[in-house]
Image 1 (cartoon, rainbow, N blue to C red):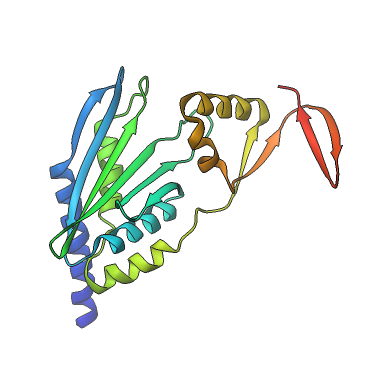
Image 2 (cartoon, rainbow, N blue to C red):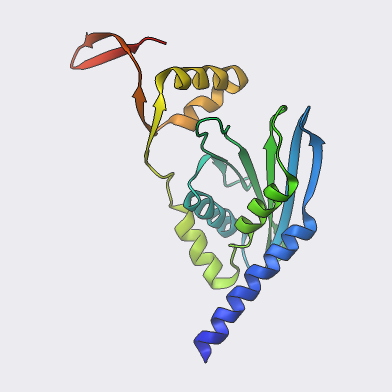
Length: 208
């Protein structure tokens, strides 16, 4: 009976966060200038550091990359990985203390020229925020999440498209390129132009 009651409590808590997120959801801007989608929830009995750690773990579990994190300001920048024609979408999380509770804000920014349905973004954000937990369970999840690292996998990509992607990212924000790709593995496919010996290594140049 105790297990059933605990499970019911967790489900009710997740539903509460989802409803709170939907009520607080807001949109500003448009596809021609860039659009901001935002919402927030209040997680009871949770400190800001644990909330930030939880969000890190939640986002990485959803195969997103955490690019930057600042514990002092309670901010975290993550993004979904670009795949083919799908561009990377940044998600900014900000946590702050409200008494003994934690306020968790989420902001999704789309670039100008990108069209996104508000209902799709709302569902995406609220499903993430609904995973937050308070109390001792939330503090344990925060400690575990803070230690998680971006998932290592190998992205297969055409070398020409990859070179164009890097160039485009560098034109928009050169600082973010290293943070976005450091530690990532790519399997690049293309025609090799030449191979040059460099000490114990080899530099491979592709025709692009």
